[in-house]
Length: 305
Length: 210
Image (tube, rainbow over all chains, first blue to last red; front, top):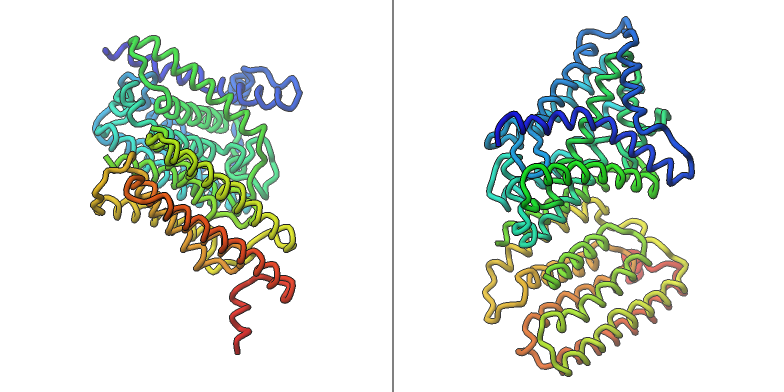
């Protein structure tokens, strides 16, 4: 597979990722019996934000300005590592799992620093929650990827997902299901989705991610919104890549199925958001701990063989 | 593959018991566990009429009789939740996770003369027994301790199912009968305790001796 075709994967991610947020909103609107925003609302928002000016508080320093830029650039870098449809990604090497997870950690670190830099007490609260919950999701994500890496015997994200053929899938269905269950919980937590955090609310006492970016404006906020859309895309692509095996018809059908699956994941997220209420903050660690349990069970089942 | 899924469900169900404080959920989980355990001997593929009768008896006792007796006791008690166990629910889950890993390790090093139908049956049976004992040790309510006893019994039952030809059915039936009598007596006792003392917390009962 040559480079020029592989570059399609990140380009698709860049083009389609804001659509996911639109699909989630539309699904939620459908369940609530409303008409809902246009599907392309996130694109309009991004367009509007890019043309606005930026307002910086006098109390902020360079960290606040660097936050969104590092956020976007790191997420763009991660996008290059994420394979769509069981082919190799643009960049891959042994152990790139760790790089991807730590790039996420880097993003989180700078988002938290930028939030703390504003000196707002609300943002500090959000930052502390984000730090707490992400410290819990990271082991779950690591263990899940370790389980599937053990199962396939590969250490690079691309090669792992290439190895998820229909044969492997059938032989290790329990592992696949455990990993997928972990990934969906991690997806909901990392992307500040409903059982953990409500992206629509602006009630500062309960929200996590939204509260950390309250002071960002204009293009900076556009960067953050686009980065979070890409993050959702990345997790959905990982989830789809693990759950849906390689059907063996070559690159393009696999790619089409994977993109379709990613869009379906956003519908599923919308359904989950419509069906359940947000957890009490005290119960969120329990919820994330369930993901860790699934991941450990996956590892137990892998190591049995 | 079917047995493996059943084992996964049993593991998850055990973890649910470890993490819930609601007594009615615990009882429902017991019923669910009873159904899976009843199907298990047939699902292992030894299909004869004796075994089918036995699993029907097992299902009717474990999945219908025990839970309905416990639910009846619960409805007389005016208690819905285990309030303060000795070990918290999050910690219990963590310990349960450790127990899963431990039981898989034990079963890997435990030589069996007959190969079970799925390598997952043995560790899950050890884990189930562990959960039962753990509930008896760490929970204060007498009702939860009865549930722990039942889960422990389920674990031992699973261990027996692995060796279907080696163990006479008569023994299994006798064990089932013993468990039935035990639950029956314990249900009545719990009801009497709660009527006398207005609670069923065993740590407070032990202070009565002095």
